Length: 237
Image (cartoon, rainbow, N blue to C red; front, side, top):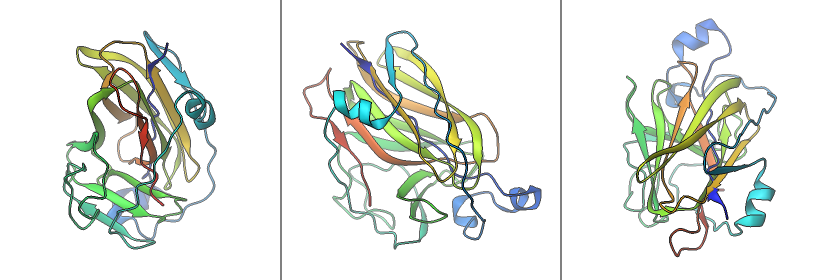
């Protein structure tokens, strides 16, 4: 049996210097910030009823299936901010109507920023289309309905590397546990988890340990027991 799999991926936004840190407060402000290769650090640990996976291959071996999701409206190389939530009802400058699969929503935990989410289409050195809070002061919450048994995603922090994050997994009755993950710049930091908790996973909260940076997510996967759904995913290319 498994525990809810959650892959935390978040990253995107620190700066390459104090002056840049003061000037860049969101992804839509950060178009000209230089990037470079940064080391990837993956750190996931079992907690309570949760089982964590060290990489996507081991996660998908237990939970196969990653449908593509190709409906964003942002042009290649572009950065666009939109108002949450991001879900299957979304129809805006970021995603076309009907292009977002059902079962999840991205909400922004307002931390003093603009409360918007950003979509970056291979911008700032990303090898994928990334989604996350536009303001570096805000945080990301992924809500899952119906509850699922497994979650995974890649975290990117293209404007910096080494930032610590905490991913907390929630069931219907509260927290199931948490685990750390470290931003790896323009290289993916994978986080995957599953659960044997009968209530499954209904929410994933990702919090950054350093103020003034941001987070982006690519290749979100979710699904499996305790509800009779096949594993679903977001793989925006």
